[in-house]
Image 1 (cartoon, helix red, strand yellow):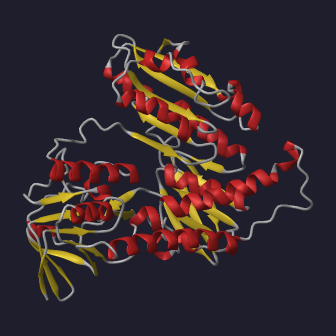
Image 2 (cartoon, helix red, strand yellow; image 1 turned 45 degrees about the vertical axis):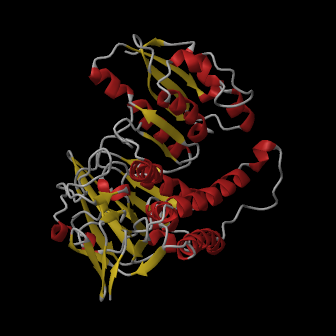
Image 3 (tube, helix red, strand yellow; image 1 turned 180 degrees about the vertical axis):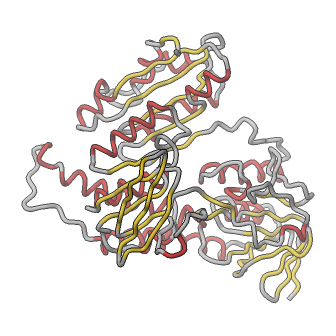
Length: 459
C-alpha cells in the first residue's frame, strides 16, 4: 500500500498523540505510527508505573510508622508484591488503552501499527506499506543504556522496563547508578522489604546537583537502611550460582557486593538507530540524538524531532512542551522556542526533591554576585506536623538584578512547592514578587517568602 497524508507522526509518547490530534483538528490528515505500546516510556515503564510503585511503597512506609502517629496496627506490615504489581499494571493498561482509543476515534487520524523507517525525507516504510507526507514528526523516545561492564553479558539484570515485571520482593537488590531512576527504585524496594545497595561511579549521588543536595538525599536513603557505595569507577560482574557478585576495585580499595537481583540505572539512549535517518539525511549527534534547532526542526526541511530523542530534555513535561511549541508555530503562526525553557524536574524519592534553574555550583562558575536563603525542614511547620522533617529548602538569587537563579526543595511537598519559584522565574519577575506574596498557612510553600527575606551572600 502507498498512502499519502498531510503529516506523519512516528511514536506515541507524550508529544506524538497530542500533536496528531491537534493537526487533525486543524483539518489535516495524519498517520501516527506505533511499533509497541501506546504512551511511550512515561505510561508504560517510566512515570506512571514508577510513581504507582512509589505510592505503594509510601503506604507500606507509613503503615510501618503508624505507632508514631498513635495508630495501632496489629501484627507486622506485609507487602503483597503480586497485588502491588497488579495495581500498577491496571493503571498502566488503562492509560495506554485510553491513548489508543483516543487516537483511533479521532477523525482524520489513522493509527498504523509497526516499525517506521525512513525511505526518503518525505516517506517512511511500515512493513509492506509506504506512507508519504510533506511533514514528519519523530517522537520515538529512548531506552535504558546498557554499558560494557565486564561480566555483564554473563549475568541477568533488570532495566527500568523489565523491573516492571517483578512480582516478588528481591532478597538483595543491587542498583548500579546513583541518579534519579536508580534512587527512586532503590527506595521503593527497600520499603517493600528488600536489602538494597546503591553503587555509583561518581564520588556522590546525583552528582549534577549541589553537594548539600546529594548529601541530603544520601542521608534520607541511609536512614532507611540503604547501603551506598560511591567512587566505584572500576566494576566487574560475576555470576555465582543464583547470586550476582559486583566486584569493585577502585583507588586501592577492593571489595564486592553480592545480590540476588541487579538493576541498571546508568542513563538513557535514544531510539534512533533503526529509523533509517540516513535515508532522509537527518543529522544526529555523537550519542545518537537527533539534532534540532530551538523550534525542534531538524536539518531537513519538513522533519521535526520531539521528546527524548532530540536530546533537548529528558522528561515528560519537556516532551509535551515540545509539542506545544511545534503546534503553535505551525498552526498559529507563532514564534515559540525552547531557548528560554527553564530546567525543572523532580526526584520522586520520599521526601521528594523539586529543582528549578541553576545549581549553586553553576551560579558560582558564572561569576555572578548572588544571595541564598536556606531553611531545614525541621523549621517548616507543615513538615513537623506531618512527622516528615528530613531535607531542606533553598533559593538563590542574583544580588544585582534580583532575578531568581535557582532553587531546590528537598522535603515533603517539594515537588509541588517548587512551582511557586518556577512560575515566578517564568514570568521574569524579581524575587521580591515572591517575597511579598501571601501564601496559605500551613503549607511548605509559605516558607518561600520567608527564605527570600533571610538572604545571605552565597559563599
